[in-house]
Amino acid sequence: MCNATVTAGGHRAVAVTESAPAVPPAAPTQTRTPDGSHSGPHDGTTTEAHHPTVRGTPDRERQGREGQGRKGQELSGPEPSGPERSRPERSSPEGSGPEGSGPDQGGGGGGYEGILRRQSLRESAARTYARSLPIVPVRARGLTIEGADGRRYLDCLSGAGTLALGHNHPVVLEAIRKVLESGAPLHVLDLATPLKDAFTSELFATLPGELADNARIQFCGPAGTDAVEAALKLVRTATGRSGLLAFTGAYHGMTSGALDASGGATDVRVTRLPYPQQYRCPFGVGGASGAQLAARWTENLLDDPKSGVTTPAGMIVEAVQGEGGVIPAPDDWMRRMRRLTAERSIPLVVDEVQTGVGRTGAFWAVEHSGIVPDVMVLSKAIGGSLPLAVIVYRSELDAWEPGAHAGTFRGNQLAMAAGTATLAYVRENKLAERAGTLGDRIIGQLRGLSAAHPCVGDVRGRGLMIGVELVDPDAAGPDDLVPPAAPALALAVQQECLARGLIVELGGRHSAVVRLLPPLTLTDEQATAVLDRFADALAAAERAHIPQLPAARRATAPRTATGPTH
Image (cartoon, rainbow, N blue to C red; front, side, top):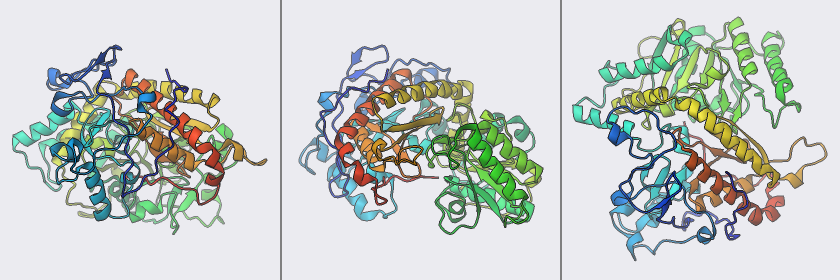
């Protein structure tokens, strides 16, 4: 169970700079297997608490999800988080020792610090994760990443939700290997191929039946944001209208149209609607009453002839807002949005880029409410770790002319093969159900931290899409329903997690929500290790940063450098 009392020597968070990257302490070489025994390097196989059936080559696919590390070393999850991890270590100076040279450090000389330094000099200022996660991954398996410095990390970012099966899952590698060995073309534009046909068939088998029976699919450019653009173009073409309904806190991508529909838009060209929240309800009531008020606001806006809002081309919504702070939409509210859009002939677009393929405890997040949208936007996990994005929509909307939406790299054969294997594996092994059960358990244990840690304002999520909002409990004013967000503390927790070999993301309105997006293959033992490390990091960050929280209350409080990806 989660241990919130483990200390870490009281060390303070290390500020991340590009000239001298913060370096987490080395992980011990000895690891704990799921049965509780300790082991050192071995052939890379592990015993797991959850044994789904496998596809392809059973012996190869049953090799542990943590896989093989350097020369057969195990890339393992659970590691101690006590005093032996309390003093961060730095690698050898560039070129001065084993960690400063050699192929395992990525080549090019200078070791991993040199790689990070060159990245800071060569890459744009728009880079995000590289700023707060100063690691250089060289191999990975399942939940675990090994850096060029030999350190191992439990990855609860999972490519921002892309890696449903974790890193380099055997069924994904086998699917890619078969394509490479078959001589099939890797680039086919939008031509029909056996691989595309297999992917489309598998995808349609997972969709809500009412949509799958009458659906069309558009293969888009490889990023989810292009699929959002395609969805917006589609509904505007089909309806002949241009307006759009979107929601506060939304995130739909980084291209122009997707940004317009996102919550951070500054040049507003869409109508913004209130998204229901339990913890920070825009109406100050929360719960079912808050959701009803949000729905009533939307309905009144559409029906009021003096609202200034004409009938739009469509409504776009996330069933769980991810970058907005891991906020699940109430099921009744989702059903009401479906009903009011259908009654007014407004196409409903649901962005399932991050929530799809079992992430929330159902194969698609819309299944929780039982609604069938007119358009579903899909990317991330559907490519099995490789770039792939599509929209699936009712055939009645298919009013495009040939070439109305195109993309040179929409025919990604490797991604289709990897995606087919991933979709089938999640479906056949009921990993969505597993994510729901394990996610409920993790959320319950995280909520248990609030008794000892008043800075834990709220724990929420669905399945293995989990958020912990950190707050400053001493800064609440007499009129505040909940304490203000604590972005500086959240950043400190993220850094303390990294120092303990745990990778997490930050999100939310004020970057004060610590986000957990582990792979669906997460075992019970790995979940315990993640919780232990998080609790340890939270306690260390509190000790170091609670006295500094008054500074974090200012509007100029530091924000995490990590950013959303589509």
